[in-house]
Image (cartoon, rainbow, N blue to C red; front, top):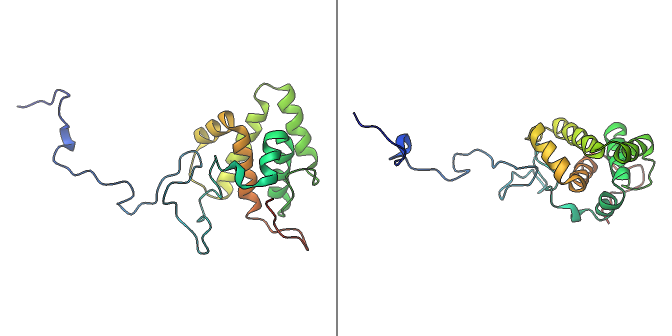
Length: 172
């Protein structure tokens, strides 16, 4: 009887390794970053179940970029309002109300409080829009890239809600 003592490939020996995605399965997203061949919807936008923009595409939305880095509490509040009210709002000073103040106070007085709120928001956005991922990837993105995560949440939700009457979406 022959035993494999760690030097060989065991069961994998003789089996050809398939290229990623060659089995017909869609590419996997890691921490919300689009894969090279992410599925596309009609019209070129992301398919349902995909983030509107990657985690590190924070510069793609002009006002959201500045709000995410300089006034993250406003961006958090704007995203919450869009999710609750169902219409687009600007990332800063557009009636973001109590959610803005909640984030500001929690972020100032509770260690890692802002990251915890960002994690909860990210999980909610991901679940509502059936985006692949889990609590672990949400946690990693929110704790290590909180501003990018807030911008990604805002960009994703804004792309899916209608602009207020008489206004169009503007990113810059």
